[in-house]
Image 1 (cartoon, helix red, strand yellow):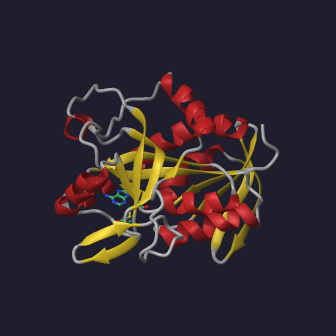
Image 2 (image 1 turned 135 degrees about the vertical axis):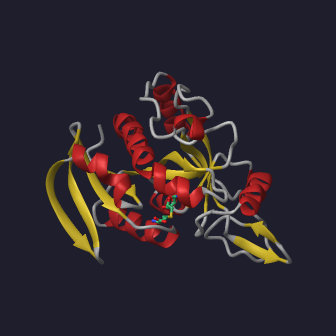
Image 3 (image 1 turned 90 degrees about the vertical axis):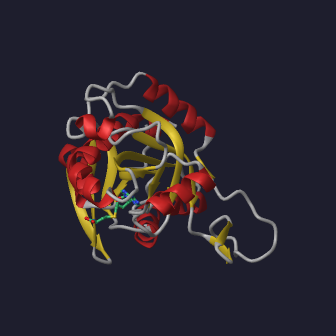
Length: 260
Ligand code: SAH
């Protein structure tokens, strides 16, 4: 296990409830109004923080976790909107590729994507996706292959299609942008343009920061809504259980990330 602590980050308090409860606390600190708790989870040194919603907040808090608290990797635990209709509310997507879907150059109605950090004007366009490092990807794929999770109770037939359907855990493409997607038209455009599995508001910002610091970044999201016209209602109804399920997966992956 790495000696440097692992950073565990969420956007909202609901997303940190379960991991916060698993923390054997050793102390805390407040910087710029953000609260950091350090201690151990299952013996592994960790620092927990809630960033609030959006890319700037995630970038700011992850920078502090990496620079001030010298964390060796960042894991995000939280919820996301569904993009892939093979998945259901309650399923888990782990970021294999993370894309900031709102970073680029707007010409007419279409956004030409650039890699965040590269000026979005002319020039060569690098790959816009931040990718999970192959060794960590392999270790995570092996760990999730035999992961058994509780059924998603709150979803029932409405969210999952079949009430007894087992929760799926997938590596996939996660889109990040500074909007809560509560729109069928925008969701359909994102699916058309990116073919992602999930959409959220922090993951690829975190990946950008982690790349600069040269540390791994693992984003674990449980689907709380379908990013469509009902997403505000589904999000509110399923947030607590989805957040808890993401945290169960994160807890299982803590030793995997620490060992890579
Ligand atoms: N607290 C607000 C909503 C938070 S925004 C409220 O109560 O209405 C949604 C949060 O969950 C973000 O942190 C984002 O990462 C994730 N998320 C869940 N569903 C999403 C969606 N449909 N679009 C974008 N982000 C989503």
